[in-house]
Image (cartoon, rainbow, N blue to C red; front, side, top):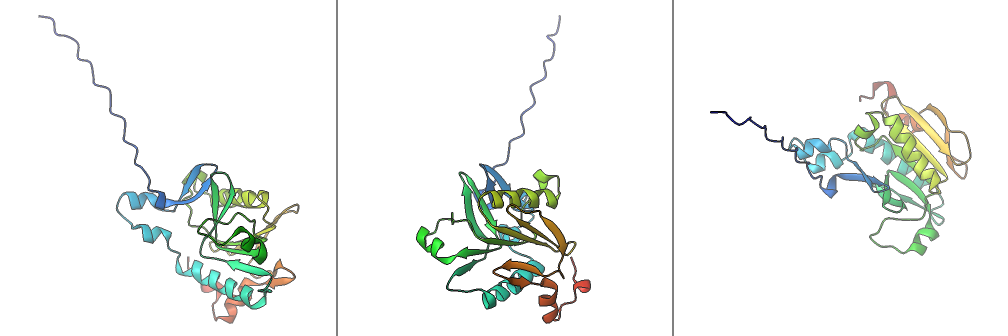
Length: 213
């Protein structure tokens, strides 16, 4: 008796895990950018709150910068947004902003609602990122360049980006050459207001050389 040849069953396709909307950090032209370590949340190794929260160093620096700005800005003219303020800059596209300086009246003209702001801020200040860098081959520099380009092209006047890994600051402005420097370099934010992060931290008794990552 001739046996029929054994035909292997087609391999089942791996079921793609659906990522909850809560794990989307930003959206770029309909393509999601997830929170860092989002896969650990899917695997049950971390909670959603753990990946969404800021580390001590990041929130400390943000608080120091915001306190400085609130002490020096004309509060009748400007409004400082923080707490990952959402900025919708194009269809199906939005970015989270650590710190942003807006013209107060333009935001009021939009109307105070639960929607993301669409008025481009005058200045954006970022400290590191909570974004998953997998699609950027793990390179934060690629993510920073892409986000900075998006913000400037959307009408943001200046982007200032502090990175804690190497204690550097990137300053990018529309129509001008970007430059990279260190935290102890005085950086003009707006209207002649100059921010020196190293000095602000030193005033709080924090030694830059002793900062841990």
